[in-house]
Length: 258
Image (tube, one colour):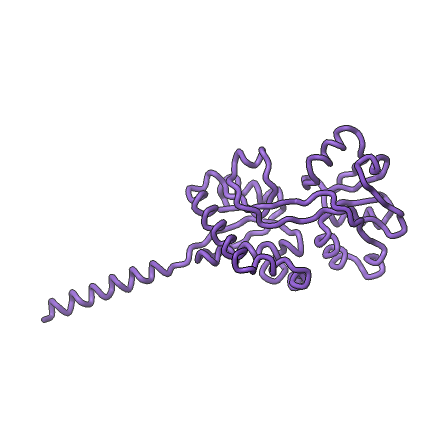
């Protein structure tokens, strides 16, 4: 009788351990940077895009942990597999040497900001000739923009941060500055007073739409698994309608930095 009871208890213990293992939540560690309202350590759910990334992985019972670094460092940390992934970046040949890319996470419209007092209008790159343009180092403004610069059509002044470029814009040292429309107005609200912010507007013509994705380093032994899991979770959000709701203008107000 004692032998039978011992076997029963052992069986129940094994079943419990197996069940507990089945419900264990996996974790992925993602390196990223500051770019509010899309990415921010100080925003609710770490910003609009990172909240979406977390929700996509949550569909597959995977938890996300974020580390915030300067953008170039976040990419290097993931590239060398110190972190499991980097989010979020545009796809190009240089990155394809080291990373696998997920499906599209977000598309951000880049527009030119300028002072209201400056009568700026443009229809082609020829219209930009001779205008002092601020640009932020390592940012992607599109292949056509790069080609126009290489052809000598653009007068670029490179700065280390978007904040510096907005200060140069307000100080009259540059005339126009390309940045995501949402990010531009978020930075203005966060870093400048109402009087300064009211001096700035943007041109409605879109310079480029930056399409970004999750990057998983090829050195990661679970790289393809994480890409597949994320893509499946993202498709579930799109099928349910949650993806579109996530990027509505009204909801973007939820991600203003604390």
